[in-house]
Image (tube, rainbow, N blue to C red; front, side, top):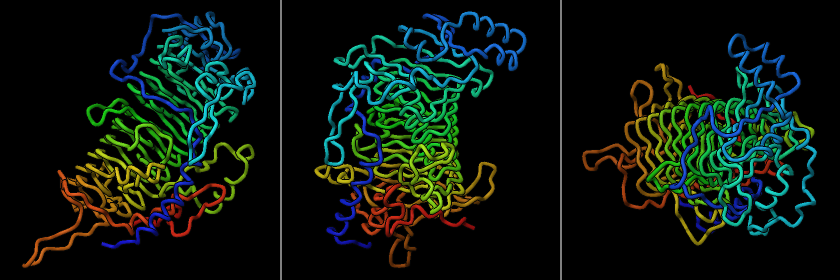
Length: 536
């Protein structure tokens, strides 16, 4: 086992602390809702007040797209329309309202005129610790009293911020009424951080529309107990397509996300089930051509199954990497029956680096500019996680690594007193590595990468092309007449003996965390941002 002097390694880690803190937009201090008291909302066809939103050309669009009974039904909705903007309908809605959006393009111009910062809410800030400094951020009161300062459409559910419970705009359903998702388009024009923000909005159900051009999140679900996102297309968010944070009882279903500078799908600070339950389900999602198809700092209690994460720079990550996320360290994500393939998009080359240093307002919003550091050519990265399960997936054509397991010392996120608290009890079982679902060979650069740290980590039943053993960076020493075989990836259920790991492997990754899109696009000693050659 190779070792790096501990002082040198700690120096690398200390330098790397700066970048994660600077990369994310700081949010107020948030709290998990009581997931035992909530549930995933179901789609409703009746009940609650009906509010209809339309544009002047909605009837024309309906006649162009529909015929027969469906056309007549939607034209009757045109006659019921009282709102030209979605936010107007949300403002008029009470609990249990159903908002139907007729075909059209919704740019929400009245919301775009709201200033940020809004002088009406000049006192509604709080200070949080971030990167060793106090940062001033908008409080919940800011969102409640000035909802469109940061958000094009805001569903703010708690009428006062003393109890953190939804009481004024709960169980709202917002549905596009087009034949295709793209028939109803909500466009942010990069004017606001969030195109749609649902904050303490328990029971929110969003369905059947396209959304684009946020300056941070296209859809943001925060401190919400019970949410469903269904049949929505997210395009070209500067950071995240679909993001939930400190929320529970959630469903991501039949979504498509592309063009995100960070992640298409982000269930961050997931519910604290500690492997006893999975509070957020992600199914039948297609996330592609983002920097990351999926990521989740403190992405706990998430079950992601039957999805496609392909043609991103990295397919999926879950981590204990960045500071300021409740629920650390990350634990208990379950990734099953997903296709994780061809994640080799070269968004970190010199030409893209130079282009993305331009001010955001001068860039084409359809060109992906990475906002977070990832190892190009990787299928799944678990960067500081415990109790995660990766099982029955098809993982192929990722030119660096199919799966990468790396421990993250707690000092990385500013909690050095916790020492080493990640990379325990992760299971990798029955995955098809370097093989397409039709059986064709399509290799990863390396199937499994591991820094050899932790306990209880195990690999069993994984197969490469033709049923061969998958490749890894932990070679086994063959048996001899005098000694049994040693090393290699430990089989399940794994060993209860703690392994200190190969510090040289961790050191080889540490400088990558110092990446910064403006000042340090090529950290010395880091190869994450150079796309590997296609394996043969």
